[in-house]
Image (tube, rainbow, N blue to C red):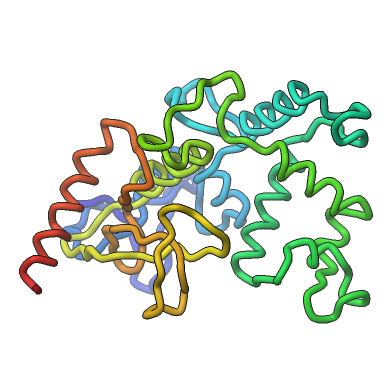
Length: 273
C-alpha cells in the first residue's frame, strides 16, 4: 500500500475544507514521488523550479537536518575560507577578489547546469550577449553576471571547494574524488528519499560523459553521451533511484543497497555471457 493524492471523478486533485490536499491508500502499481518527502520539503504542483532544486540541494542547513547534509551556504563559506588562506584579494593572488555570496554561488551552479543542457566550446562564451556572439552568446548570462563575469568565474573556479580546507585530504586510492564527494553523496541521498519505488525496477549501466582527463575515464563509442564514467544504477520509470561506481565512496549506511545492486548486475552479466 502507498499513500497517493485522492483524485475526483473529473480527474482533479481533491482538497479538504481547509484547502489541504486529500490522500488515500492505494496498492502501489508503479513508482512515484514520495509524498512524505514532498510534505517535508513543502513542495506542491505549483512549486517553482528553483524550489525543487533547493529541495535536492538546500541553500542553508536546518537544525533538523542530519550532520551529513550539505548546503550552498556551507560551500560558500568553504570557498571564502580558501580565498583567505590563499591571500586572495591582495597583490599576490587575484587582487580584485572579494568574498562570494550564496546567491553568487547558486548562479555559477546554474551556469554549469545550463552548460550541460546547451554546451559551448568554452563556458566563458556564454558571458557575451547574443549581439556580440549570435551563436554561443547568452543575453541572460550576460545580464546576470555583468561585465566582470570572466574574471569572477576564474576566481570561482580557482577557489571553489566542497570540502573544508582544514580537513585532511585522504589518499586517492580510497577517495579518488574527495573534492566532490559531498555533492555525490548529497545527490545519492536526495534521489533515494524523493522517490517511492514501484514493484518493477531496472538495473543497468549509465554514462556520465564529460570532456577532459581522469584516471577512471573510459572510452565509450557506443553511446551518444561519449567518453566518461560508467556507473551502475537502479532506475524506475526513467528515474535514477541510486547509482554506484568504484569512483564514488558513500557512507556505510548506504553501502548495502549499493553492494546489492553491484551483485545483481554482475549476476545478470554472468548469465548473459
